[in-house]
Image (cartoon, rainbow, N blue to C red; front, side, top):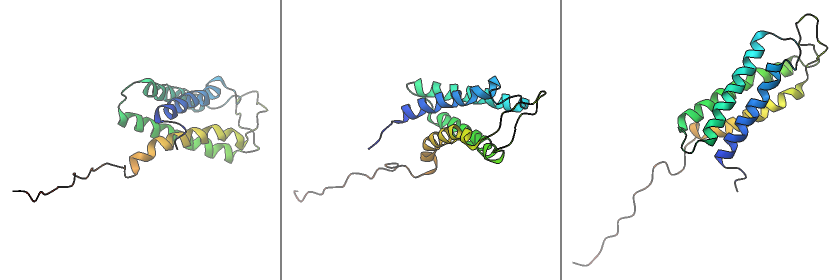
Length: 143
């Protein structure tokens, strides 16, 4: 029993990827490196691309898979860093922010990563009905 079809998974993944990028762009986590803001912008752009593939009637399947793979790989650094800096301040601006990292902030990244993994897995697994067997040959005994 499928709960969501692929179009719905793409739609949710695209929306969540955009939402995940917004706090990084808006500086929600305090003053951070410029690369963090760029990561947020890239996340929002990739989410928009995925959203486009979800809305499009006949998207290019390979581009959808590549986009999902890129989004999946983009989630790895934030997941690792939220766990690594757990309980520590991550702001390096002046004045320092009182924001302290917590592993719970990695949960949206994990969800986005799992959704994209769901979209990417068929690329690496053997697809059903990839090679259809020819119909059985029926021989007749009539001459």
